[in-house]
Image 1 (tube, rainbow, N blue to C red):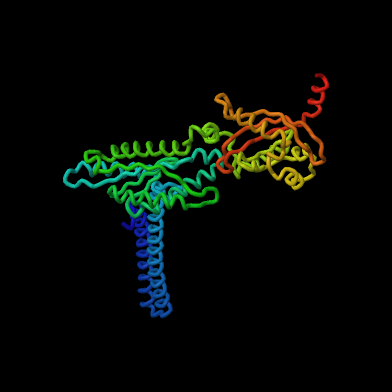
Image 2 (image 1 turned 90 degrees about the horizontal axis):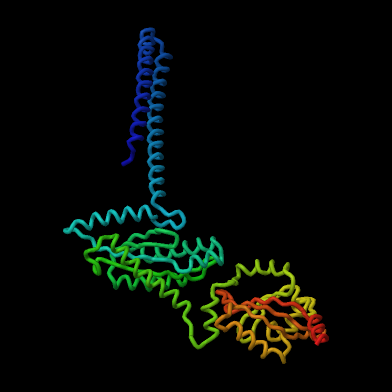
Amino acid sequence: MLFSSQGKRSFRIVNIVVLLLITLTVLVLSIYFAVSLYNHEASGLLFVALALIISVVVLFAVIILNLLKSAKHELTVEQIRKLAYLDTLTGLENRTAYKEYIDHLNEKLKDKDIKPFISIIMLDVNGLKKTNDIYGHLAGDELIIGSSECIKRVFSSSGRCFRTGGDEFVVIADMNHEQFEKKSVELEKTLSLWKGEYIDGISISMGKADMAEYPDHNADQLLVEADKVMYKNKQNYYTSQLAVDENDNKSKRKLRFSDEFSLTKYTMPVIRQMAEVIPGGFFIYRENERREIIYQNTKVLDIYGCKSVDEFQELTDNSFQNMVLPEDFERIQGIIDDQIDSDKGDGMDHVIYRIKRRDGQIRWIDDYGHYSHSPDYGDIYYVFINDITEHMIQRSTAN
């Protein structure tokens, strides 16, 4: 339909006014034409002819302008209607459109003679909260947008795709189990290859229910069944992320401390800024074979008698193991492991050891460490140190 009812009324009113004006003009011109003809005035006849032409042009111009105005009004109404049913972040159909479509399907399912085959797929993005907490809400939005792009790419040819909540999506399609399995594999591959500014690879938990499994269910009941399967798969996903070897203390640590004190490439700049203003030395190292140092503040350089990071790395080979006097290291590492792996441990350790400065001096260090498992850096330790040499000398003298 080209015109809305309001557009039609506006069009009719404008045209009535224009026709009245044109009629009045023609009447006046006709009288003038008759007078000119009676008086044999050629100029008057020419004026009347021109005036009539202008009147006709004005009439058509007004009609065309009203047609354009009505078309523009109709386009605006259509745009508003579309916006009401679209999710602004992802461009998928939104919850309003989803609920209307579910109601429509429920009505169709009441007809026993024409009963459509329905497959409902529930999808829930894994790790949105953690992404928001670690990387920020821009990364969270990117995760949602990336998920929607992958879902649309895989499922839009088979059915309708909706975003129904923060990290929740629904696909409603005509799809048997074999087709769904193929689409699941395709979606998993598409998600794993997706890359954005903050996110590399996406994980989604899915659940499906269809009329073949539940022939007596309506659309709402199918949604409940699909949601149950999706929730079970989501639980399995998080369980697999925390799977550990019960005989491996290092593996147990990941389970106990995986979400604490997360270090990422986005939080590292903040930690660097904070570390430069705290009293005492602070450094971070990986708990791997090399015990590689990721970062050290300026105070650590002072404690080790180094004027630059290059001097410190040359002295220690950028390893925590070489920060400790060699004859002390194995004993110190054993104490750290015992404290972290203790059943009552809270991820914290405290040790005292000796170091050898760049100038050859032997100094005593008080060390407080905190173990964590970082998604970007793996197993790491945050360590606060202070030089307590004078205190140790005084204590030795007193004894």
